[in-house]
Length: 445
Ligand code: 5CA
Image (cartoon, rainbow, N blue to C red; front, side, top):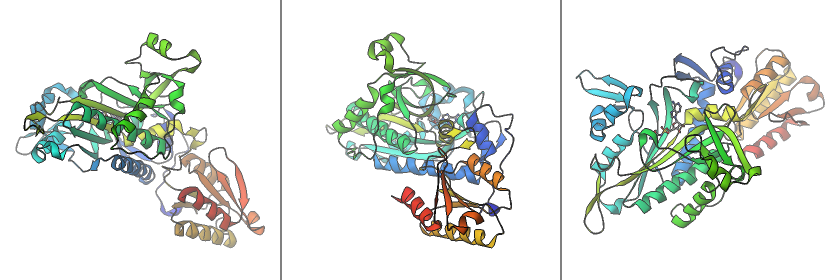
């Protein structure tokens, strides 16, 4: 993409309505625009990051055996009356009426609808287990939407739902999702820690939240430092192997890690040596629940077992907030100059800065690099504006692309350009061909 043709409304000043750094940087880097309290339009630059996060979520959900689908945002109130949550959910639910005076709602979550789909399509234990998921916009009329996309009213959620015959199988599905979450967040360059959690209005008796450690997090967290040092990497995981998956869950959930809601200081001290005790703040980016038959019973989602008897199906639900993650990643990855995107989610792979737009040699070298990077399968952003070098550097630092190729007449006299890493700022001179080869090897290996 050429910056002269892009829409990147960069702000020089920090907007006063934004109190935390991710919100400030998202506004300054032209990623989002507020349309009403807690409602945001995703401008092209922000939308690219959101799509990359979604892509990682899709890949890891499907790797763990979950099936992608899509349910509507608007739901009939009828289903929620069946579960008893229509009245229980309260003012956070946005209620609407259609032209036939039917009560509808903008979905805050999808347990009822997926249970309805399940009861109409699956009847036998032979068709189990099943995990279904979608990535869809949700609406919750939060009383105090704040922190930009982190606590919005309309937000994107990946919600998965598991269906099993027995509690033991349901716990295996829960474990599959827990392990897939570890890799999902790790791939995004985050340290997200699973913490024992309360179940809240979703219900159930087994729940973990995944929290990214960041100073601006809404929850206070207490944890054993050891859990932040674990790494799944590219480990081969057989998601059908119950014991293998349970072993990974055990490894990640046995060190003490809880939010203020479930924290118990005496247990913390008894289980964790003093030098490993960490008190911090965290942002919840995922939440998983096992809740048995809480929805299948009232909605009569029954399956016949091997003995011919009919029982309500065992369920769990598993949420990730892709739109919140954009903010959470920025909270975890920035410096005073701006964002520092992890390579896995960066909206463009590299920026090309032309120090002297209009100089025929500099222009030609930039074009060559731009074309070569695109040919190699990369997505560069070429700053081809007539701007001072200082302003171009400040913009690149603000928008946070992990790599910058700087091209100017002086370097070109010696046949070189400069390749700079955003994190740390280390620079190296090399030929344009070497810069293209280096970037290709960074991203394409
Ligand atoms: N049905 C279950 C799991 S599928 C559920 O609704 N879980 S949840 O309430 O914990 O939400 C799942 C995830 O959505 C959260 O972990 C968070 O990442 C994201 N989320 C929740 N509320 C908001 C909000 N107001 N703004 C942005 N993201 C949110």
